[in-house]
Amino acid sequence: MKNLTVQEIIKATNAELIIGNPKFICEKFSHDTRTIEKGDTYIAIKGETFDGNLFWKEALQKGADCIIVSDIKYNQEELEQWKNKTILKVDDTLKALYEIAKLKRSFYKIPVIAITGSVGKTSTKDIIANVVSQKYKTLKTIGNNNNNIGLPFTILKLQDEEAMVLEMGMNHFGEIRLLTNIAKPNICVITNIGTSHIGNLGSRQNILKAKLEILEGTENPTIIINNDNDLLHKWQEENKNEKNIITYGIEEKSNLNAKEIILKESGSEFTCKIQEKDEKINVPVGGEHFILNSLCAICVGKELGIEPDKIKKGIEEFELTKKRMEIIETKTGIKIINDSYNASLESIKASLKYLSSLDGNRKIAVLGDILELGEYAEKLHKKVGEEIPKSKIDILICRGENAKYIVEEAEKLGMPKEKIYYLKSNEEIVEKIKEIAKPKDIILLKASNGMKFFDIAEKCKEEFECKK
Image 1: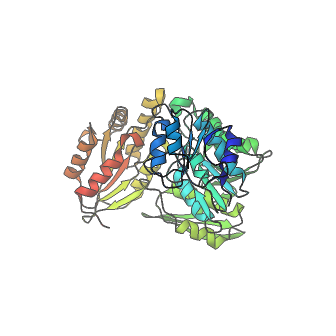
Image 2 (image 1 turned 180 degrees about the horizontal axis):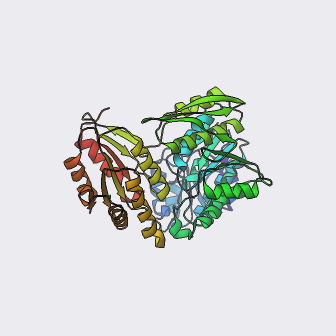
Image 3 (image 1 turned 90 degrees about the vertical axis):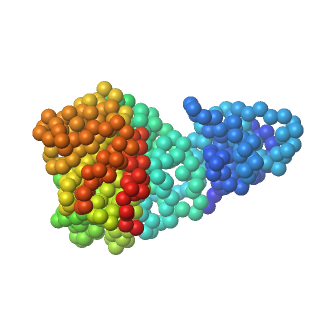
């Protein structure tokens, strides 16, 4: 375990010591005065819509022993008041955060697994972390703190951990490059290349290019990819002789394939080869995409030399981050699948496929806008609409500016008008569900996070008598 001293931070960030002890040890870091604890080091992040520098006094009052700021006004009387604290001034607190996290990372010679992809990053991260933790004490990204602030602060939590599993998200070129050069991963995972953020990047080929920035953080990393994804499959075929690539898949012949797949409502089973022996794997979450996530975790486990029984245990006991495939069961038999955290064409297709596989009365899909699609919004929402009749959905409920295209396409392909509801608010959706839901119906909630469909799930929990 290695904590940072103020002196080391000064050297890494070219900071000016306003007051304080250069030998002070910075053990815990925070950028939120609402959750700050005694002894923390507060970094006053300045963004487009907020300025942490405005809260420097509050941070000290709440117990921070050290603050890192870029733009504050103070007088001699105030410095005297805080003479037992440490105040560092830097040109840019965000850049300082990056350098501090890089320095912290450099102290640890441990496996670092970085995960990116258009969909499935968080659930893949969760299952990988659970496998890795069977052998190593593991630090992982909490929730989806996968951006230029969340990832460095995750690294700054390192204490006595023996491995780290980090999620990396992006909306534009250069963002993954920044993250991977801070994290320096030695295992890089790419789950898939889909259409998320295509409005910002312009094409799936550009999305692939942006995701491949993950490889720029370290020399000759192990690369683990979903070989069933068309663009990743093509990329690995072109690069397999030059890079250390491990593939997994269901359809394409890969280094690790799932066989003898049995899909169930609340999970699945498959077999695959671990250490030259076929092993039966039980996945505790339904949906074929979780088989792919499990295969990915097995690849990581094998790469780290984790024993087969521990790999299996890690998969069988993992828990999803909330709002992802959360199953809400009512005492009347109505089942609500809360998959409302985020959405893309690919993830909606996977969720609809899972919904259609379940045994129940009626299948009700409640779908909202996929955001950040730009000029592709109409085309991709229509593609979602195409999936409705294929998935044998009984009732379709939609909300959102672009969700109208889902409705139009579903109706065009033969879904009866009386089975479609295009509503204006989440409150209307809750009322409609209360009105039409019958025992043993299965209801899927799926939309981009900005649509706040998780509020619908919470309201349904209140309105229906739910099982514990």
